[in-house]
Image 1: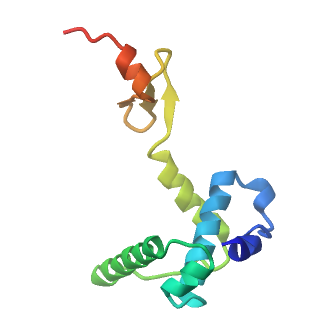
Image 2 (image 1 turned 60 degrees about the horizontal axis):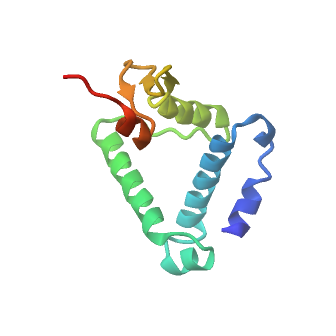
Image 3 (image 1 turned 180 degrees about the vertical axis):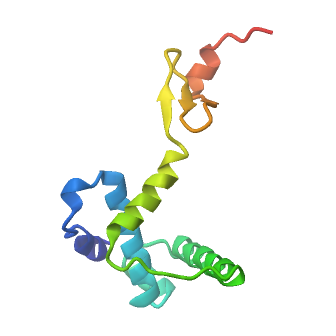
Length: 130
């Protein structure tokens, strides 16, 4: 994994991206290397300290998504080197889990204002009234 990640660190826009997006780009680079250079082999994963089962599952999910695109006649377009499209996709996925902390320590999601409890200690200390 060190060999692959070392090429990812050289991303020219890493100074302006949050760390979690850099990690996602790293995962995308690892997946691409797995499908091209690694030829989806367990030995290649072992040599690069990667989880073969997780990468195989990602490949399977991507294959299923491609089948859905073909079934519903949705054109398959690559964004190429335009990372803005990838960043927008990743951030829109994070927005579904965005929340604000309330004074009592719980979180309310921004999208539907549902209450999410942050940890177990809150649940134990909370007094429930019937």
